[in-house]
Image (cartoon, rainbow, N blue to C red; front, side, top):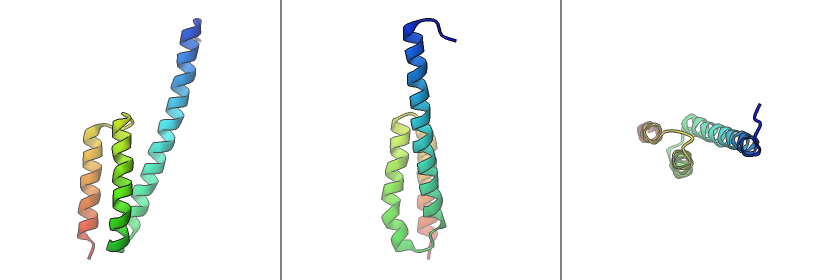
Length: 84
């Protein structure tokens, strides 16, 4: 366990960040899942901007890598455009 005051504080901060990152990551994954499960192109297009915004925020906060964010967005847009 940490002995210094600053190290103890850093441990507390990193636990908070970890919980926050896990929450935002899980929320985004659920939003992607519901978006891809939707079969209506009109409503999917409306949700698409929200989901892409969520993915961009994760990449900006370094929760996910920027290339992973790009791959996710690309795959989602392809799936939405393939809907009839």
